[in-house]
Amino acid sequence: MSSASQSSWEPVRKVRTYEQVMAQIEQRMLEGLLAPGDRLPSERELSQLLGVSRPSLREALRVLEALGIVEVRPGRGPEGGTMFVGRPGDGFAILLKMQLALGHFSDTDVLRTRLMLEEWAVADAARNATHEDHEALRGILDRMDAPELTARDFNRLDTEFHVRVAESTGNSLASYLMSSLRAAIQRQMIDVYEQLADWRETARAVRAEHREILRAVEEHDVPRAIELVCGHINDFYELGSFSDGAAERDH
Amino acid sequence: MSSASQSSWEPVRKVRTYEQVMAQIEQRMLEGLLAPGDRLPSERELSQLLGVSRPSLREALRVLEALGIVEVRPGRGPEGGTMFVGRPGDGFAILLKMQLALGHFSDTDVLRTRLMLEEWAVADAARNATHEDHEALRGILDRMDAPELTARDFNRLDTEFHVRVAESTGNSLASYLMSSLRAAIQRQMIDVYEQLADWRETARAVRAEHREILRAVEEHDVPRAIELVCGHINDFYELGSFSDGAAERDH
Image 1 (tube, rainbow over the protein chains, first blue to last red):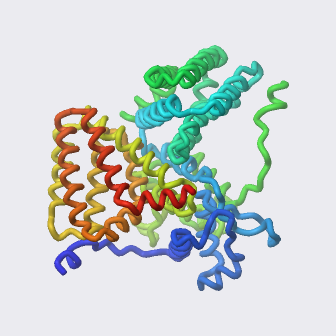
Image 2: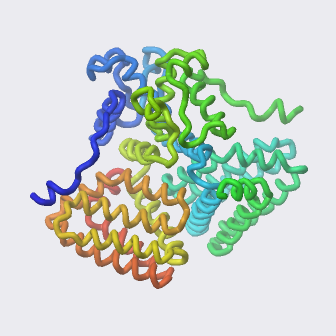
């Protein structure tokens, strides 16, 4: 009795209608009643079933849509309606981008977290990547050699390489964290490239470093792969803009 | 010219009004025009400024609220309105919980990702934690010794210990990832405890393991700290329910 009376109390706060709608949908997910590919009833039907107004229901659906949990397609046919998606989506990247914009995390923390994820990914990839993984990675690096790439396209392929390394580990949650983080800082990375007098020279160094990383992964050389990745990322941050920004914001 | 005509094309998709509102707000954040503690104009004012309907504006605000980017307080006074918050919030934990419920990530991936984050955290803490960190960690373990704790309270303190270890690294983004992951699986962890014939016996083992981990951190013994944390987490998952679930869902 004493533990029940003293613990587990939580402050009461107003629960909004859209939160109650979300809670019911989440409960059904947890019970396995809603799975990827399933559709919700129409807005009209669902608002009646739940006894809530259309605008309140739509708020809940927008939140789920923005989080990448559902996709809302126009129309009533077999293609239309609110469907639960089967992939993680980019909800965390969107959230993270806003959190970074508001200064919730410093540039130093972003760099250290990237290093942590990249170290883990490349070590695990050097241990476990298959021949198929190596082929896929080589394919990306070949595409990065195309001379007419823009800074933006180059950065997109760069992201693809690093995310593909993480995917070689077979751990989809950790690669999701990695790709979300990369997506959240993509604009900032492209800015760094575009501010360089000659970004193509930097790109040449990046290309060579990627080839070396791939070689270490193919040779299952874990310590070498880790060393190369850390050097590779630190080199990029030392290009200037990032570290200045970090110093400024951490101040 | 050839690169401009061949690259950077993206499929066109319908952009909804609430997304345009969010994009404008995000742009202002990125330009530093909106910072934690700042307030948005009232809904009436902002809907006029943006030329959008109140329901569309409210959808955008709900999304930002659900992501934990803004807090919406009732009333018009100095306490009321839509304010940008200064902490990361629990947006990622909410997202992750739904992604796990929909089976976007397997239990095995959750376990491996926890191990990655915990290994990094304890190693960095063993290198860098201060006397103050040690004191704080000891305080949590002392509270976990209280005999009248419920399984729920015990788990909450357990989470607090692991998150506090991550915070000892000074990397707020990586500790945010850790605490979000813990929060997303909390219900599942409590279920494991509650299904045990005698959860207090398990709690005794967990307590002893925590003390050992803290000792390794205090003694700056990095390899020992890593070994202990991995054993600690694997022990918990071997309690049964988790690994069965993983096998079932990964199938």
